[in-house]
Image (tube, rainbow, N blue to C red):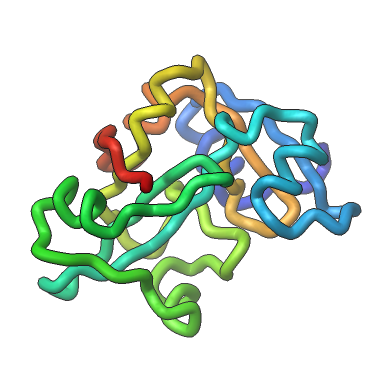
Length: 156
């Protein structure tokens, strides 16, 4: 692969092993469609969601693409009274990423990140490489080396 996203460059620099996938030349839009195009189990492909807590702090949640974030469980996981989804217009200025290309790695700031407990069922998980059309696959243990990560039950 000639093209590398910033996420891939960070992984290379950190000497963290990963696999990469592209679906840039497809019509896949939803996470479930992306998993299908990649020939991967949708339970192993995670989407990255950014929220803001009652305290105005931002949090990142990673959940399987076919699932929905439970905002109450999410708030509890980060010790907030409540969290709500970050408005789409605020995503790029807050994270440096656009909707559909948001990765937990390489955000403008380091945010507390929670991955759904089902990630522990897999040796590797797949998530955005920071650009629409690109995904990386790596272990949760290696992801912990790059982001403040905890594991919790955060889906409906």
